[in-house]
Image 1 (cartoon, rainbow, N blue to C red):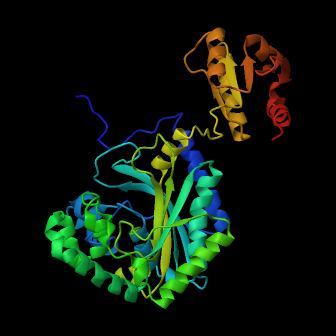
Image 2 (tube, helix red, strand yellow; image 1 turned 45 degrees about the vertical axis):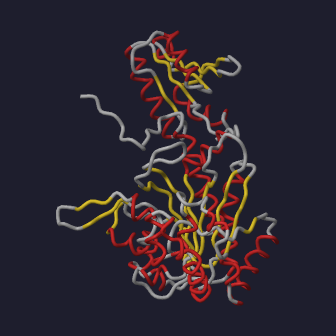
Length: 424
């Protein structure tokens, strides 16, 4: 029987995985500088967590979750996003009780959504995200947005566009909600069944509908910015000023609502302009969720965060012909000729690896010429050659591949010699 990889998933093979490692390390280093700490949560959670945390009117909950029953009859779901799990952990482990607040966390890990696979959108994908819990200061809104923008900037991406909006506080959203219901209700039968259900539960989500986005009522729908109260307006103005002071350009889009139910006040997306990226131009998005912690059973705690897809990031880098500084080179390749030499060569490799060198050798009894070709393929900096005559003299021949220069070095001095040569 021939087994094939499930649709919407991928194998990340050597030669490509180094790119993933590089961007993940870049994310970790950036979070270190911003003082965000890594959190790792389970890949599956109780289904109710996502229904309450993500929102039962979202496409994710209604159409895209991988849900199953375990042997105890409990409903579990592979996590479709990272915020709900992070907040659940924040509540369950009482991180709100730590003396240092806000709690600033980040995660990197696989998520799962049953979507139609397409370029840059997989059923299993990897998200990098941050969550800052415990502060309602607009400064941290700007910090989270700045972190996301800086991540892309440091990787070299160009033609980025930051789009922001305010969804307002509860009072502002309620006023906007009433206006939306009055606007859509007389002609709601012209919209899809999802929008008809959302009219009563969350009419704001109608504005995010992909099926009915060209309906004439969409263009004339009431904008949230017209319903912001004074407090929400002042908050949004502070966020905009902070971004301006940081030199971060942005556009205000009153129709930006985001796809999850828990957002309020600041919402944002980072998009990419340019040819070759297809119709889906959004790289990442996030926003403030001041009611989510309470919804999951914790105390009243404000929060803000964002998440991005590593797959879409790598796709954007490829479209813009940006090469990351990754290498598959190794430091040393050991060529051993003869049975006794192979034993000595294995020990040399072991000692060099202990000293911190990347090192490999032949395991297929190839001839000298074939082993030299292997060293070339590995892009080895040095080749160490040992045969019967070298064993008798207790030396190894060290060849620097870039120059072709060779030198005999005593076996017990080889590690120190290479440490000096490579300035390690």
